[in-house]
Length: 346
Image 1 (cartoon, rainbow, N blue to C red):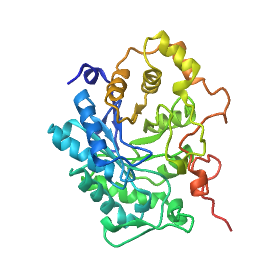
Image 2: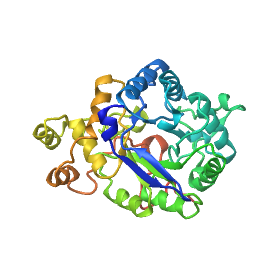
Image 3: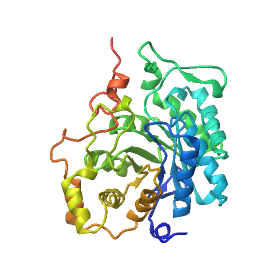
Image 4: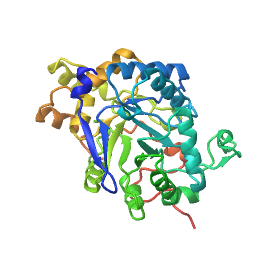
């Protein structure tokens, strides 16, 4: 076990009931804007395991199970104890029908070669229509424009999908369930009917999108926050209306702080996130950066003035930069805090 792994913090998340979820502060994200081959994912995960990572984040939607397969192959080749690992995957948008949820999870477990997940997230609060009989044959229904056909009724009723996810916990198929890309409004609505509270909300979070209000709300509700895209960065084109991707790694303030502490801008951004109380899942297929990211979270805490400077890079509300913004792809804004979109029209 590396020094970085020993020193890296672990967040303890109280679950509904009496158990606690131990979430390593840093995990390896396995998303790629261009779906990476199984072997590419596998090699990245093997490098991460060798470096000391024990937290891995994947999703069925990352290459239609390809990322899950690569992660699973790496874990088997590694040969260590499964109980040392914290494995996260996500329910795909086209699998939101309550009767599809368990089959979707089992499809992910089959891809991974595992019999349980530590955490299963609802990837987006959006449901697509699907077609096909057997789970391996399921495909997303698409319109003439190539975009997924939205199931508006089910999108408005995430509680029905959530109830089916709660059953996965009861059946011992997952240790915990959570949400991803949920704003305050949608999280509050889900909590009104949830029997099992979401353990985690995984959202885009970096100094250009600090999510101060969402972070405070989740803390108040006892929901841990994991930061995806903690360095900013380029998602797939469908959810990226901002085609100019200069991000916080290039920010002058971030670079000045990095120079002062003799480290990299990425290291500063990751330390800022973890010091705020969020876990992080930066993605990388580069062995050197994988090691650097792990080392970053075990660095000494940043002084208060640096934390304040990083948290204030967006001076005015409305100036935030959201890199993962699917409003033009979906046709409605899932992050609208005033209206629970999609709004039902008379």
